[in-house]
Length: 436
Ligand SMILES: Cc1ncc(COP(=O)(O)O)c(C=O)c1O
Image 1 (tube, rainbow, N blue to C red):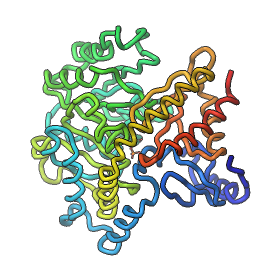
Image 2: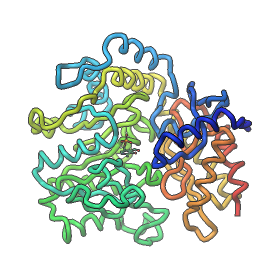
Image 3: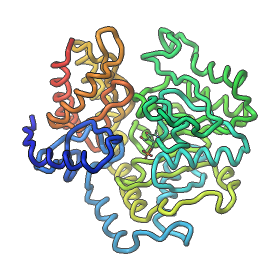
Image 4: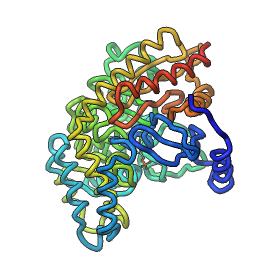
């Protein structure tokens, strides 16, 4: 257990509270100073195993020497020039590298780079609306696509993000995502429901969303913020088929799932689906702010010059960090590691579930694992999760939640099985105290 000396951290937390908006919610009370590999260190030198990876971002861990070197080299050459002023070689190289690992027709696609996942999402829907000249977007409940007013119109994880903000982007319609552990339609199992959530998309297209008005369907191939929800087989393939039938674009939000986290380079590959537009963020910048949209070349080519842009998007230092990160993910076989360590973590929680019924569900793919905490009546343990993340943090593991009450386990992809066990042991020890 990590012993907490309150003074240094407490002082920083007090200063933060005096200076920073309370709208930023903190899942732990750790005051970070530095990171190395899978570990973070606070201002008092205490070490924490990082199960959050900067919200599923730091795929090769903290301060990987090759990433640091790439950043330093580029910082000495050029930190900013802006994509509208001229051409930037790291921008081109990163887009080429992402295309090389993209599925299907996206290998020959074209991209634009932005600064954040939300911007990538808004870029994706702008592109879809422009090229189809159709006004509507279909999204799913439990999805998270970002907080700025455009992306927020698509986000449907919690009313806390939307309260007092009505009048968002219009033309957005939501149908239920197949969250099978808590089926929105109260079916018993995805094996017997006949993909009811997919049928509701069909129904929406017959009743409220005229397909000829629909530009795109945006979907997280595996839901991130909303609870690490893996859809049943057939769901994404069904969406692809519906899109093809109606000339609607399939937009995959792979901001959290993309670039190796789920055990595939792109999560859509678990179901052999190729979207028309894919939104990327988080890991693409290797720890620096960067995001992007990769789309079919014919769609990008239909977007006229100056229709879109940004000052910082595709920043050369961020692109170099992203390139180094992608290279390490490939060279060090981190996708294989994500599968084996992720499976191990799931099996550890399934084992723990036998003696700890507070763990209602264990799910995920690769190193995107959720352990959903429940009350005795099966409802989400919303109050418990808030205390549990802080307590796990106090005991040496940086962790956050997803969905209403799930522990979100998304460590760097370099994590070893031994390190994963170290973190899972601490979590299980904390959960024992909340056992009912
Ligand atoms: C799937 C998904 N889309 C979009 C976003 C928004 O990204 P950002 O916070 O970088 O704007 C997130 C962030 O968590 C995400 O998980």
